[in-house]
Image (cartoon, helix red, strand yellow):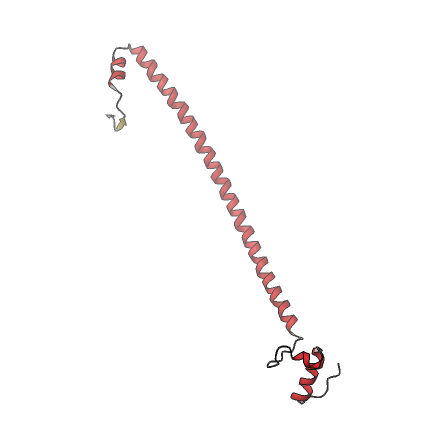
Length: 133
């Protein structure tokens, strides 16, 4: 590698160096100018690519921020819906009476009528007054 003022250049193969040494100053200058134009084109392409990528990254950041907002909103809705479901479940239990210790299928003893079975349990086993329903 060749170095000039701290910059490092790749080695040019021997044949190219020999060809350059026999060229006139104008021809050498033309080669250098041609290479500069090629590098300038490549630099422009890289600059364009970087700018496009920066734009895409910015757009992605904006999209991520929007998604965070949507997730927060949906999370809030889910919390409210869970509370509403819990409330409905509690309300549905308010008018229920649970009798433990009644064997499965016991309603068959009173011709399959659950209300008769409950009345029998309440009056005979719990010594309560006859319900009016």
